[in-house]
Length: 315
Image 1 (cartoon, one colour):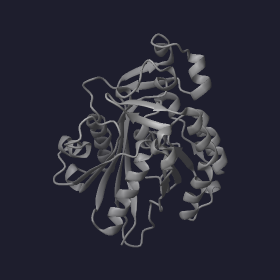
Image 2 (cartoon, rainbow, N blue to C red):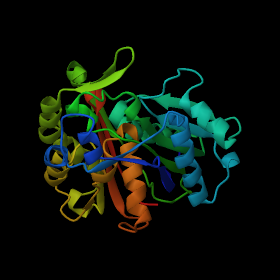
Image 3 (cartoon, one colour):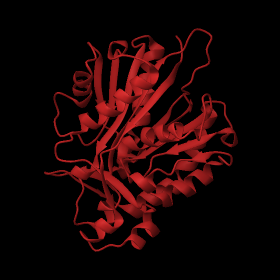
Image 4 (cartoon, one colour):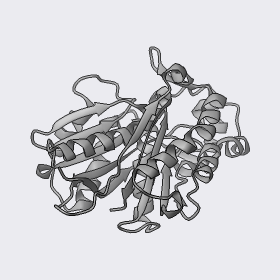
C-alpha cells in the first residue's frame, strides 16, 4: 500500500458577476449589510444552460492540463455536489463523458459543504487500497439554482463554481501527500442546514451554524493536524469551507495556525458549497501564495452538520 498525493489543481467560475449592489435591487439589502454580516462583496452565477457537470468538467480539464495528463490517464472520477438535478447519469459519469475518460469508476458524493474533503479522502483510500492509480476529485455546485432569491439572509451567501484535484499514487518510499482524514457529523442537528422541498431550496439556521462552527470545530480541526503529526503553527495555509468570513476568521484563529495564509475566497466568490475548498486552494496555488510541498489544512463543514479535514502537501 502506498500513500497518495495531489499532483495538480484546477478551478472554474461562470462569467457572470453578481455584486452586492445588484442584490440590493432584488431584495431588501445593501452592500454595507452584506459585508458587515458575511464579508462577501461579489459572487459568480451560472446561466440556465450551464449545468453542474459543465462547471465540474471545466475545472477537471484545467487540473488535468496542469498535471500534463490526458483523460486516458484517469481511472476514477469522484464528484462532490448537492445541487445536481438529475439522479442518473450521475455528475461524475457526465464529467467522464465530457472529457472522454475511458471506463472510470464514477461516483457522486453528497456531503454538501464538506463534500470535497470527503471525496478527497475517498480517493486517497482507493489509491491506498490499490483500486485506483489516478483519480479526479471534483467539488462542484450551482447554489444559485437552489437559492431562495426572496430571502435576504441566504441569497446573499451563494455562488456557483467548481474546483478539481488530480490524486495519484506516491512512488515507493515517497512521503504521502494526503494525510489521514478526520471526519464525522452531528446528525441530530442536521436540519440546521437544508436543501429540500420541491423545487429544492437552501435554508439554514444561521446562528446555530455559527455557534457550532466557531466553538466545536476548532478542536476537531486541530485533531486533523495531529493525525498528520503536524503542529498547527507549522501550517503554510488553511483552506476552510468558504461559508462566511465571520466564521472563517475566528475558526482559523482558534486552530492556532499563526503562520498560515488563510483562504478568504468567500469575499469574491460567495459560498459555493462543495466547490469552495478546491476553488480557494487552486487560487492560492495559482497566485503563488503557497509553494510545492507546503503543508495545507483543508477543512470542510456544513450541511448535515458534517465535517472532514486532512493536511495535504501543496502540488
